[in-house]
Amino acid sequence: QVQLIESGGGLVPAGGSLKLSCAASGAPVRAYGMGWFRQAPGKEREFVAGISWNSANIRYSDSMKGRFTISRDNGKNTVYLQMISLKPEDTAVYYCAARATFYSNSVGDSSNEYNHWGQGTQVTVSS
Image 1: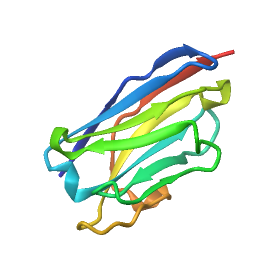
Image 2: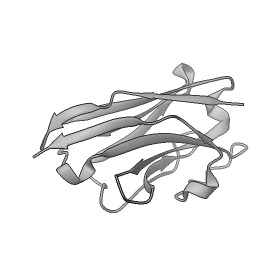
Image 3: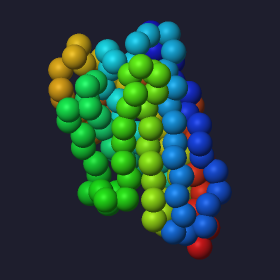
């Protein structure tokens, strides 16, 4: 079973950038489709981005397209989320998630498609 640990969160001013990392252990991450979600206080968890096991398919939430970039390095068992032009409304806890896809190229955009989650990393964007 895969375990996920996020890192890279922090406090940045509006317009700034952050790169989140999600390190996987316990199983090779290449067997999983991966996703990033976020949850702001008082709001439901929302999809940010997803990537297939071989990076062939990538999907973004419309509100983050062009500002966020998801990538993965299966050799390092790590998935990344590069965020630029951050806005105060991007403030949230960001979660990494994995879904067993058996090497299909599908990308999930719903939290109930993922069955492994990290503990989350806080991103705070000041205005």
